[in-house]
Length: 197
Image 1 (cartoon, rainbow, N blue to C red):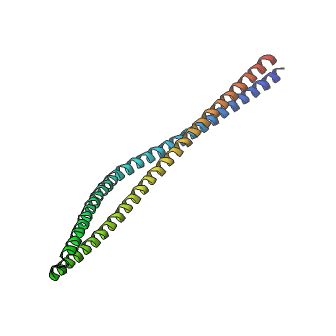
Image 2: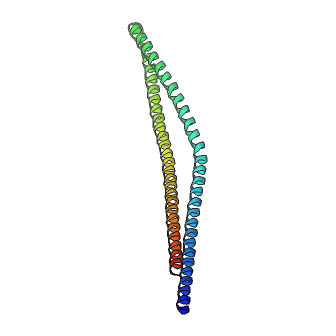
Image 3: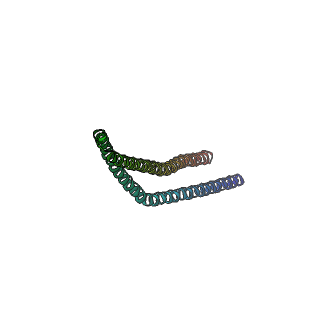
């Protein structure tokens, strides 16, 4: 009987040692998870810093692009006004031509020369308008590309946050499961020892 008791005590001690080893393993797993969470947090912080740097770098560019857009719009308005004035001058010259057709040929030639000059000016102004419109389109494309880059970075940050939340939820569930298993084994061996001895 004494030998049996001793054997049972030894078995209980072994079981307790196994439980302690299991607890140590659980603690090691928890530490590894905590390390992974810390690494994810560091990555998130780095991404946030990169976002801030990009924003700081992109804000002056955006301001410059907006200023250039405003300047180009002003130039377009001025050119349109000049075009209107030139068209009015052309109309006036045509009226003068119609009135002075019968009077003098020299004046007619001079007016024709003026008309040619005005037409050349109009063509030049139209070319300038086209160039300005092309510049506006390029600037708008640059703005769209910058906005797309910011949106992609924000999406990446959101994905990392979701990953972190999922890891936290998994960690809490596994901790609860480990506590349930521990309490279950503890009460089981306690009642076993109490009823048999």
